[in-house]
Every structure is written in C-alpha cells, then in structure tokens.
Amino acid sequence: MSYYLLIGIICLSCFAFLIRTLLDHRGWGWSIVSGGILLITGVLFYLNPQLAGIIGGSLWGLFLILPLWGCAWVNQLIYQERYGEARKLALCLRWLHPADGWFEQPFILETLEMGQQGKISEAIKRLHPYETSITSTGRNATALLFIMGAQWQELLQWIEHHVPERVLEEDAYLVTNYLRALGETGDLNGLLWGLERYEGHLSKSGNPIPLNLARLFAFAFCGQVDRVCHLLAEPLVDYPSHKKKFWRLTAQMAAGQNPNVEEQFLALQESANDFMLKKAIAWRLSHPPQDLETILIPFSWQTLKRLQGSLQQERRYGTALSLSPRHAKVTCSLIALNILFFALEVAFGGSKNTDTLDQLGALMPYALWHGEWWRSISANFLHYGALHLFSNMVGLYFLGPFVEAIAGGWRYLFIYFGSGIGAMYAFSAIAIAQGMPYQRLVGASAAIMGILGAILAILLQGWLREKSQVAAKRLRLFLAIVALQVTFDFLIPEVSFLAHALGLGLGFTIAMILFPQGVK
Image (cartoon, rainbow, N blue to C red; front, side, top):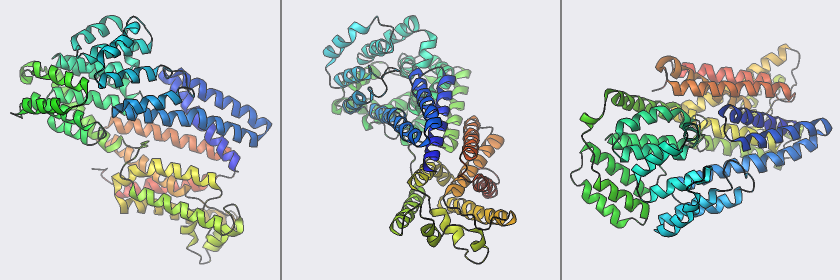
C-alpha cells in the first residue's frame, strides 16, 4: 500500500504542477522537471511498482520539493534583505534547477549585497556589461543600476523604451519597481492605473510578496496610513524594520499627518546601515508629496477603494492553503497527538501490525455497534505506516490553520472531531448494511476531509454573500483539490473513498450550520 500511496501522491502533484506551469506560460524549467518525473514514474510503475516508488519519490523530493522549498526560502531572505544568506542558498539550489534564471540569481544577489553595503562603484562596474543584455539577468542588472542611485525617472524611461509589455508582465521584480518609480516621480494616477493593469499578473507569480509590495507603494504614496500599517503588520510582517518605518513615514508625509516627519526621516537616515535606503530617504526629502485632492482623478479614488476591499477579502479568505501558516496552535497540537499515537503503535508491535492496531482502537464496525464507542475516536489517530501518517499530517498542516483562524479553537475542534467521529459511525452503519462488519479502518483522513469540506463552505459563502473574487478563486482551487482526491481514492484501492466522502460532507454541513451568515 505504501508504494501505491507514494506513487499516487507523486503523480497527482506532478500532474497538477505541470498543468499550472503550462497554463501560466512561464517556468518552462518546472514543466520539464514535473513532466520528466511523471514520465519516469509512470514507465517504472509498469515494470516494478516498488522501484517506481523509490526512484520516483527520490526524483520528486530532490528536483521538485527541495527546489520549491528552497525557492520560497530564498525569496523570504531577499524580502528580509538578507542578501548574503540568500546568495549562499541560491548557489546550492541552482544545480538542482538550472533553468528559469536560477543559475544567474547569485550574481544579482551579490550585487544587491554590495549596494546595500555602500560598495556602489564596485556594484556598478559589475552591472555595466549587462546593460545591453535582453536576458532576465541583464534586465534585473540594469534596473539595479537605476535603483541604487535612486534614478527613478531614468528607470521609467528605460522600462518604457526597452522592456516589452509581455516581458514586463512576466517579471514581478520589474513590475513592482516600475510601479514604485511611478510613485516616486509623482505620477500617482499612473501608479494606480498600473497596479490595476498588472495586479492579475503579480497574483499569478506564485509569490504574494510582490503584489503586497505594490499595494504598499500605492497606499503609502496616496497617504493611506492605516492600510500601510495593516500591510506591514500582517502580510508584510517580516519586512525589515527600517523599511517598515520608511514606508510609514512616507504615508504620513503624503497624508500630512506628522509635522515632524522630516526630522524622523533624517534620524532614520543617520541610523541606517543600508546605503540604498539612505539614497531613498534623500530622494524622498527632496521630492515632497503634492496635494492628493487635486492630483488623484476619480478612477484613482475608485481603485484605492477597490484595493481596500481586496485587502479585506484576502485577509479573510486569502490564507487558505498557506505554505507558511501562522497562529496554528490547535492544528500543531492535533499533529503532535497523531505522532504520539503513531509512536505508541511502533512501541506496541508496529504500525502495520493489525493486532496492534486493533488493540489501540482501530475502527471495526461490528465492535463499534456492540458498545466499543471509543473506537470512533481512537481510529482517527491511528495510521497504517509512516507514509500514511506523513501524507495526512501534511494535509492537516496546510488545511487546518485557515479553519482554525476563521472558526476559533473550539469550533475548529468541533468540525474536526464531528467530521472524523461522524464519518466513523456512518461508515460502520454502511459497512454493516453491506455485510462487511469486520472491515478495519484507521487514519485522520475523514477528519481532515471534514476540514476541507469546511473550507469549501466558507469560501462558497464568501463568493455568494460577498461576491468575493478572492473567495471564488480559492473555491475553484479547492474544488480541483477535491477532484484530484477523488481520482486518487479510485486509483488506490486501499484508500477508503467512502470515509473521505463522508468526512467531506460532514465538514461542509457542520460549517454551514456554524456560519449561517458567512464569516465576519
């Protein structure tokens, strides 16, 4: 069963990744990797399923999961302006994924580190040979030349005359700096129009940071102090503290709220160790903001209002399936409890020993209906093998925090156990009716599917009641996940489609009862 389960996970994840990269018309390197792993695993499956699981799993972990995790880590380090650490990690990762600009990334990161340290002449000397290059590295190098000197007008002219629209749409780094340059040069209407134009492309980049930075620029230059503070407190919480202060002061200057803003900018400039920040502050003080009421046209005010609404919707629905969930104490406790039960399985004879599973509380419909009610609870914490446990805990880690944040701890537990225990009783009733009273069932899958059902209910209500496009987009994603799960259930005979379906339906129903008017 373990090899079939692993092969199913590999094939479904690679197929989903291949489809996504092909539809986005970007990341051809990822398309080759995921397609290659899918092909190799499929061929080996017909020859030797066990060998397919071993080789396919190794390729999947080494060339897909590890680079994806590393890419997210590098992006986080760049965002925190820890360029030296990001460069060292990128030097290792580029050998696992040499396409999509990864091989040139350490060069850019080293140059950023030099600029941050004030070694501008050395950085410019390194960048000049790339000024006429049309490669991704050349474009980013040229943009850096302008950014290091706070030459925002020159950056705008270069992008408008030398960067094709198609290229700009696909480069989140250039887009965010283009939008910032519009704000720095006082073209606030152009900034808001540009954000309206490129918002969809930024959201498809797979990294939420560029989109949130673009929103930060728009709100800061337009004096929306509260929105800036919200962005810096939640989606941009890991932004460097000195940059947070810089953008808060920018918003206050634009809004005219802080009479001492110039003195605070000067104090920040004096204390900063970042040379590029010092240049940015000098530019800000020499280019004070203009009167927003006379500059912004009606379209711009409407865009600001829409951005505020989008931010509220993303705060409510956008964290579903987050790769780095926050505030998930109950979810982590449930994961720890599952791991503890697995340790008991190993200690009492092995997680694949049916006698051990029966003694610890595996579900058997006959026993449940003859008074052993506790099996409906314990069976949710038992797993058949390490891979079974791992796959379920990964699902719980990614799905649980969203419902926990929306519902709160107690209602989250009610959904989890209501789905899991309810599915065990319903499964037992159906099994007995079909003449299979001794069919054994273990695993947290039904409870986790209940969490998935609750997510569907929350997103559905957000779409129907609030007309939220964020909720609608996430709903489509989770419906695709359900479709993949159903396919997976039918491909792997040892997996109980019935238990999964029951858990999904119960979770959806419970959430609809708990949130009859949607979430607030």
